[in-house]
Length: 262
Ligand SMILES: Nc1ncnc2c1ncn2[C@@H]1O[C@H](COP(=O)(O)OP(=O)(O)O)[C@@H](O)[C@H]1O
Ligand SMILES: CC(=O)N[C@@H](CCC(=O)OP(=O)(O)O)C(=O)O
Image (cartoon, rainbow, N blue to C red; front, top):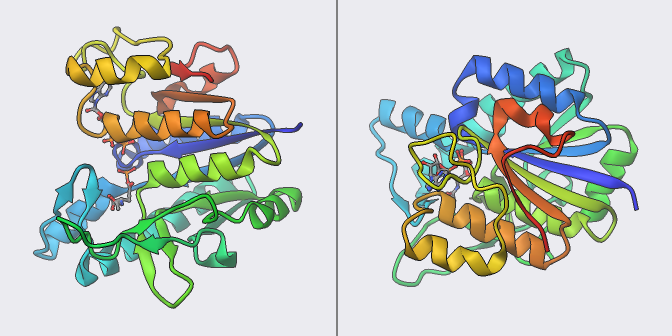
């Protein structure tokens, strides 16, 4: 089976132009087929605030009312996605920037209202990602760059967490490729002490996850990230890595961040 690498880049890195430039250089240098998934939550929050719209996050997910949906669509599908594609093109990657509506690549379902109404947030299931469409783009020599905007197939755009998109894309593509999933963010990996960048946990096993949550080692955004990582492993992805965006080159040496294996 051919190898495919799915890389997700978070909003804190995208917000720093030097870090983003270095990351995109390393991404371009990475051999083999690849797909980039990007977030941008921090930039959407800042733009919203400048327009007088406060961000509301519940369990790491953005409550997305109609005004917020307009903002995230402009920021993720427009500003960030198109700038990233232009930068990748300049670096020699034949990138194509897409939402989940383009080519019906990711069809989501609006999250049902329970205790919390998340608004226009899209959830994914095992049929959401079109692996055949992504495969045809890869076979055409393109590098898909996916943002966090999906659709419901009935005109409605939806906001879907970018970590979840990366995990679902990796799982869907694992039917066709030997797939590895790489979460890049601003720290060197999953840390024993979140304030000490030299305390990287090199490997985490699924059965250790609950303990790490219970003793407070992993908190906040790291909890859904690890949850997505272990879901991907359980459903066919060969390895998941979590590490620092500007150390992506270390992937080849096998020394990049924290890894999770089946
Ligand atoms: N043990 C840990 N190691 C590393 N980061 C952690 C840990 N526990 C909590 N975190 C937090 O998780 C955050 C990453 O989650 P998130 O902000 O959702 O990432 P992203 O930038 O990819 O969207 C980090 O910025 C960090 O503050
Ligand atoms: C529903 C939901 O929470 N969507 C996310 C999508 C962007 C994202 O995931 O960005 P980061 O990876 O930079 O956090 C949001 O709007 O924040």
